[in-house]
Picture (tube, one colour):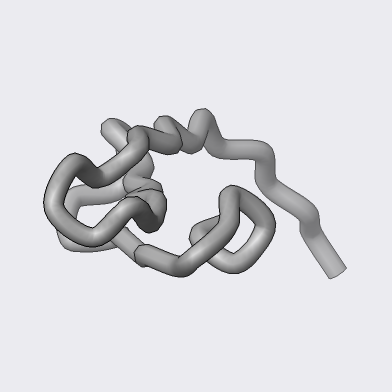
Length: 40
């Protein structure tokens, strides 16, 4: 099994107070959540 490490950017959303996360090296890879941990 291989493991990979990717940079993840987490930003606070201004509209709903949650967080969004995305990887600049993986186009289309994104997430969001109420907390930083949920977004990751």
